[in-house]
Length: 136
Image 1 (cartoon, rainbow, N blue to C red):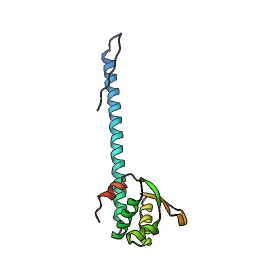
Image 2: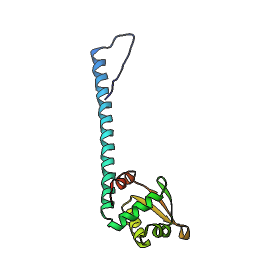
Image 3: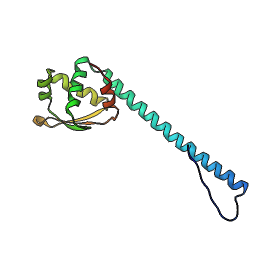
Image 4: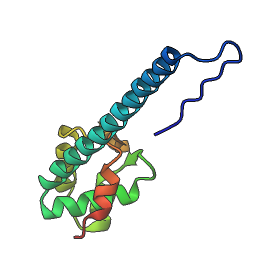
């Protein structure tokens, strides 16, 4: 995990000093391990949320989502559902339903801008990874 280096010139370390140093190193090591465990748990939770959200989508909604996020550059951007619907042959309602499902799962955030389109922001960093794994 790491090394704790302790130095002192005068007087030399006593046994009590060494025990205290080892105890401190153990506490720091346990805290590092706890934080790593929390990160792993958070990662697993995010992945599970994304998989559950994708699992609720129908075949055509998955197709729509892949089209939407292929158009989206980065983690957020503007989307015009009617243009994607025209290009991909998917109805606008399927696109809207897919976005609603993802939004209610907390995976994305969307805000309608009326005729200008819809602003979409990906909230869960694992979403694109899981979407790339899908084969339709």
